[in-house]
Image (cartoon, rainbow, N blue to C red; front, top):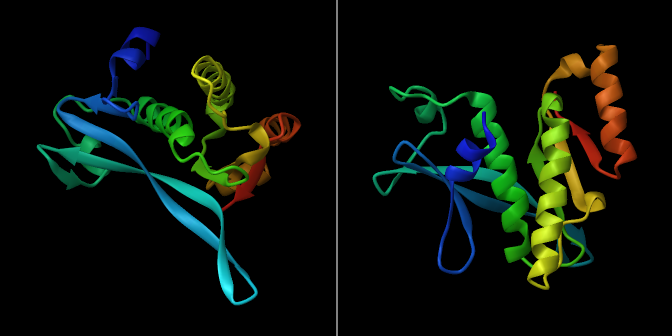
Length: 168
């Protein structure tokens, strides 16, 4: 994956929402609200980022991208979606809410770069950036609990202030 291929895949609409464009398909960030009970009501505490894929104006499964004739690298798709979720977070503008997103440990360097880039962009337009303490990375691979290299990568996330959720 080259930087230019990555940047070429990102399109921005008229109000600043970023989407990914891959071979005629559009990848969009969608955020599922997460609530906690507080007395007799519910309080919004987080958003779970998911990717909505559209082709020819209609929704398709994300797996549909992998079966396309010129299927992009799954790692490229994962990194693009993660960048879209973090970059579009500023459009929610809800202080104190966390962002849950899927994360592959092999993408730690990319995640740090994404957070830094989003912070610079937010600062340049006078908006709040997503702070590492409000990011929760969902790790779905149970192998990380036994592999020493993976445990070091998990520790790297913790040291950066990013919270970890193991969903194995």
